[in-house]
Image (cartoon, rainbow, N blue to C red; front, top):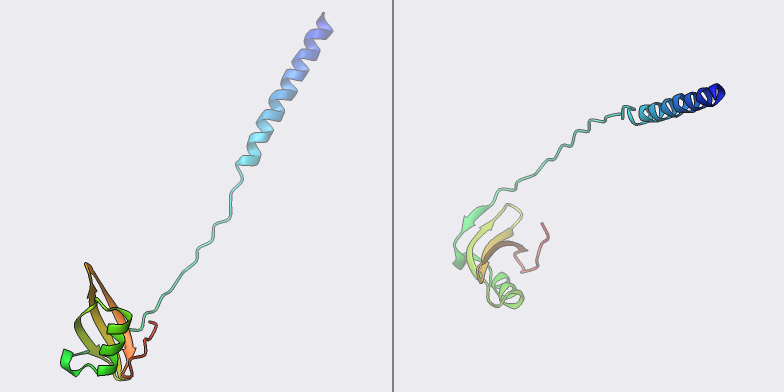
Length: 106
């Protein structure tokens, strides 16, 4: 009976050691990395122009692409690229076009 108690105690202590040992594997420190992200935006200089000064090619392209669009304001930059502030329904947005009415992705 004494040997039985000793064997049970050994198994109990061994089990406790295994359980406590397994906790230490979860306590590892993860390496941290600090990354720096830099974003640079290049803002082009646009000058507002009168709606009458917008080339007909741009007005025609706008009418074709967005028949319900209302041209609110127009701007031009040094490269003769136009920025158009438009309203379609209840949404406002910007479009970019060259002087020939070709759309520019910006």
